[in-house]
Length: 86
Image 1 (cartoon, one colour):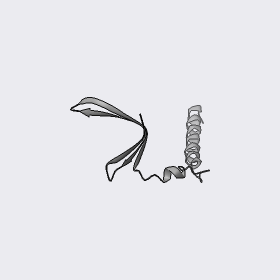
Image 2: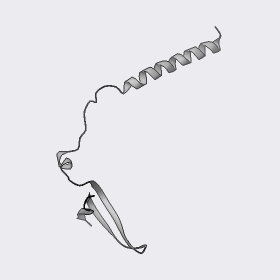
Image 3: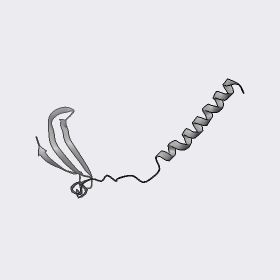
Image 4: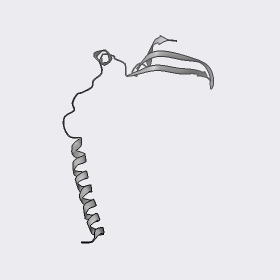
């Protein structure tokens, strides 16, 4: 057996083992399930934005901006509740 053939066989063996073992590393049950706190789960808003900054424009000219610590957006009513505005 030549050295080149030996390396070719040995390399394919390593790749075969690697392809067999790597997918099995992701199998199994997760150690813990991370969920949001109960306070966050009770929010009825469709979207929650933390650190919201929005610019108000009229005819392409910036007239002002709104900053809020938290914004709750409701899709069905096109309503936004802003908390801790600056």
